[in-house]
Image: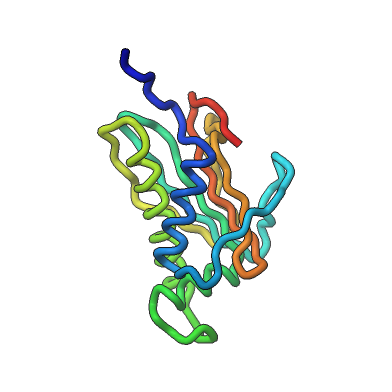
Amino acid sequence: MTAPALTAPSYDDVRAVTDEVWTTLLGEAAPLIDRLVPVGTPFDSVGVWSAAVTVSGGWEGSVTVELTTYVAGALTTTMLDLPHDAEVSDADVADAVGELVNMLGGNVKSLMPGPSVLSLPSVAAGRAAFSSDAREVARVEATWDGEPVRVTVHNSTGETHR
């Protein structure tokens, strides 16, 4: 008997992918720590960067990331191997946040039925807008260095995991 195809990644899968990508980019010195947030709580839209990629093909969905400006800046200086207090441009931050969501999306895509393709990342200073038919299927709420980080996976037909 063949196992049924997954319709959505589980919370555990998304958390594992998030931890792996985070450690790859920022090292093990300051890991992500779980953060308890009531379901439906919006991410503060002030002082935030967000990014999204879509997966199309054998599985249809999207992966989004939301970070405070502080976390986005730290991610950028680490990725560019700059001093922690270095000034970074918005373009550099957009590139770093885009690469983060691209890596997360690629890892989620690899968990799902294929073949599928990953879109280019869409990055915004502020909250990203989501499609009206997007259904949240998994969300990781964490903190890094005391600041909130959110990774969310959406699709239009999947089962929900929290």
